[in-house]
Image (cartoon, rainbow, N blue to C red; front, side):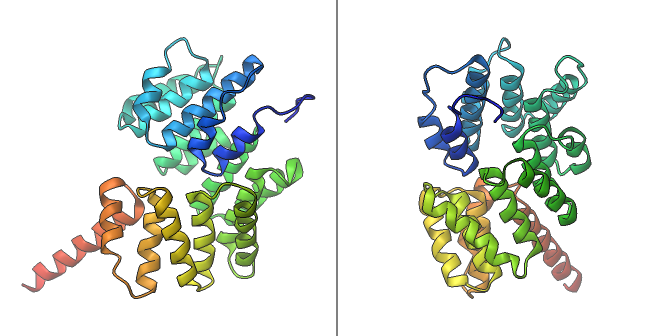
Length: 289
């Protein structure tokens, strides 16, 4: 941060970045914040509630007089609560408003929403110019979704130049290493291992370690990490999805995890793929019959 004083939000941000959402909420009572820091604090708290699935709380508490950054977070809550068309319409209206269209928080939420829509080109329209570490980290995620690890690596280099020790830089480094694979897999594992030694263990960290283990063929260790993650959050989408994959590699039934994923996250890519495969199988059976 460019501030000359202490960074009062450092621990709060770190908890949020590493998926310790309740911890972030619990740490949010910070006295003596500047007006800008107070808005950022509130934004992190509300995004933590969104991550925990408490969309309605966010929608109810952020009113029309709130700053743009918080209004943007409310749009994300509305979008994830199912009011997608209305949220995207409002988002576009605000992005086209010269007075607020370049707001970093608004551009970040635009990137997140369009990434959910799998409209990566539209997402990059608002995130690609960067401006904050979160925007750079989101760029890395978007490029990896597009299978462009070369562009993701360029974004990572920018982050390394700004602050190589930043939590988001380390996370982005791990994501890129996972995508590149090979000898980089061990480096990714060590980053998540370092996080696990210095921070509260979260599903995000446990899944990171587990995915590295699976890529390295260590499926028993991966399963152990994923079951630990499931104990922390029985409905976490990535944990359930990774348990499906891990169980199949171990020759175990993945049906229960897949059913849990279908119930709690019906739009997850793994559920969609499984449904598509089931439909194809049914069509094949009917054609033979």
